[in-house]
Length: 353
Image 1 (cartoon, one colour):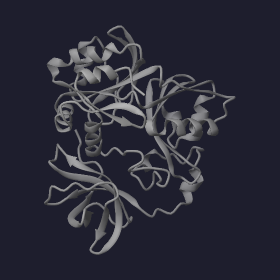
Image 2 (cartoon, helix red, strand yellow):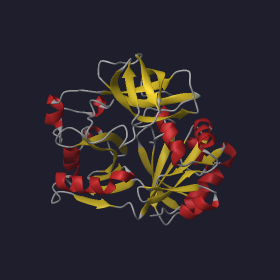
Image 3 (spheres, rainbow, N blue to C red):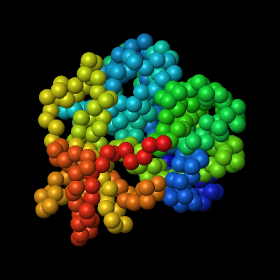
C-alpha cells in the first residue's frame, strides 16, 4: 500500500521500506540529521499508515468507554485523549488516541500494525446497534508537523494555533484543504497532526515551502523511532503488547478504575511481575537491541524491548522489562552479542523539551 505522498517521497530521495504492508520512507538525508532537525526546528512526517476510525452515534461515548482504560467523559469537544485498550486479562490490545470532534462524533487513531486487529476488537466490544464504526484510513491522510518551529510554520500558512493547547484540536483550512489539526505527536516536541482528505496531497509541498525559512526537514520512520525513544514513548509490539499491562508499563495514569472497561477486573487482581525501565549503556558505543538480556551479576533479571543511539544525548539508550524490585538508578549489565556491558536503569523519559 502507498500513501498519497509516495511519489513525493521518491522525488525527495527517500529510502523506502515495507512497514506492515505500507511503502514508507525510512529516511531522506539521514536519521541523525532528521532527528536533530526536528529537535532544533521542525520535521514533516507522513504518518498516513496509522489507522483512523470514525465512531459516531448518540451512544458513541458510552461504547468507547467500554473499550478504553482512560475516561473519555473527561474529554470536551475539541479534545484528544491517550489510552490503552485492554483484553480481558488486562494485556494491552493497542494504545490509541481518541479525539472528540463534537457530541457523538469521535475519531480514533490506532497503530498501523494493529489496524485490522483493532477493528475486529472494537466491533466485538461495542454494540453496533448503538454506534457506527467506520475505517476511514484509505480515504484520509495524516501528516505530523513536529518541532519548536511547527506553530510558526502553520501561522505562516494562515492558521491561528495560539488557542489550541496540548491534546486540543481545531478545524481550519490550509492551502485550500479543510483540516482537523490536533496538537499531538510522537516525538517529545511541540507539534501537530493534520487530518485531511487524501486528495489534497499538495499540502505536503505547501508545508515544506512554508517551513523552508524555519529549517524544516522531511523526516522518516528512522528519526521517528529515535525521537520517541528519547521522549519515553512506547512502541507497540516492542515495549507493550497483549502480554503486558498498563501497570507494568508506565501507563498507570491512563487507568481510571471508576469506569467500566474491558480488563478492569483483571487489572485489579493481576500480580505485577515486571516493570518497564529505561537504561543507558555505560562507557561504550554498543547499542542494545530487542531480545538482549539484562543481568544482575550472573542472574538474568529482564530483557531489552527497544534500543538505539540517542543523537541528543550522544550515547546508547533503551527500554527493558526487569523484575519490579529493580528501580531507577540500579546498576546492571546488558548482554550485547557475546559480551556484557555495564548499564544503569533510568526513567523511560530521557529527553524533556
